Length: 594
Image (cartoon, rainbow, N blue to C red):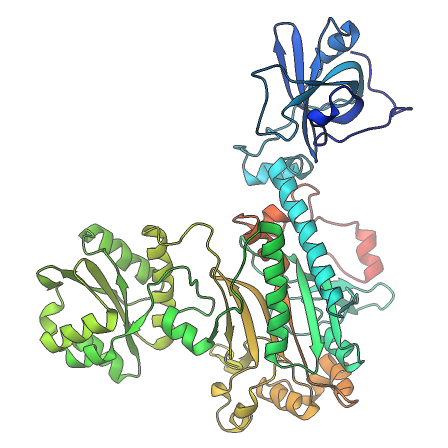
């Protein structure tokens, strides 16, 4: 086969590879794309020609054009070609109903080789056995797979839906700086040295938090931005060092106003991208309710297995383990694993080991059988206590009751995780079910025992509930925040708050966080000063767009919906980044190599 053409010349594509149907039979067309598959059937060569729009079958018949046929004999996977020919109906019995183009084929009489390809390191197909590492190294090939292309097209459509909706609601899109000031927002900053200001550093933004607040102070009322954010933190399947947010801020609003906009966005995305109608309105739980019932601040509501307090039954028993925990201010809670009384001792031991792996001192259990309650600890429960257990857990013969006794935080952590584990083992999570909810009124502060100081649960600009203002002086650990998270199927997909808009309140919170006046002025002086110039009440929310698209695409990892993601060690395998740089570049920046 002769060398590839230097270009397209006067050839111009008439259709993409997903466009032709039986309505085009008889037309002369010119298609371009990649060779996906090549088949030689009894002297006739068939090529599946692929582009991002679809696949069209091309036929090379020596009786129609022997030159094109001879050229086609040399084609291999991923060669780039252009073909001209006539659209014909596929012969009877050769129709492919799985393809939009499956009723036709193009009988080629002219072929132009545009470029050759080396043999790809993996098949360009949805079902590939290539590991993630090799796919990320050759990401430009991985991006050719229809599944990955579909994810990026879904993401693109999601962008447009969000932009149209917010534009219709009076929001304006404003870009904020990527080179900004390092401020504490919960994770490490990515730092950028300044050559023209030796010894000084910019930080890449963890979020546009202070800028969007400044836009509200500037009077812009309704802002949004689909923006890249950066956090230097340990990674996992749903985290990347650079990620995308739908960032929203509104002035003169309460929590309900922000939540309504966020619900509209979520419902629009699911309705238009997946034809799924979500609840209207979304249910709401306070943080306290979520932790008490589900042991999690992002509960999955697609199944039951709620946590139940069995303190009364524990008090009525003679089981000293439970008594000592209750006497020390702890909790005793349980889960009813419906229909699991037939679990073997080995299966129960697995659950005990799972709980202990999460820090539990143990996991007590009682089987509810037709003969009554069975367990080594039943002897400590008189009939009154047994009745209270059964009533508290709504147990019936055939059930398995599981108990954890510890301090509230540990009980929630263990039983919350055990609830999810049981749901997976028992296949309790229904297919294609979507359960959104709001979780609100989080604690404003939490104690960092190692540092012996308070930290902000969300960020230091979150306002306390108005009725909890007095607690900032008397019991700051009990103060609740005007913060809210949007949860979907156990995933936090958005989070936000009503912001502090008065300098005196912001200064008080900094004081509680042990950010002194000098540090506050150095890190946040521009915001504190702006609060003195007529700052309106305001609040907002930010969606984790990567995570949301991951759910919509039914993928497990956000790396599958990002064009060029990093590994879980924050490495770009394709471009080999990060990498060392020239010593001359470092000297220009005033940086000495370690």
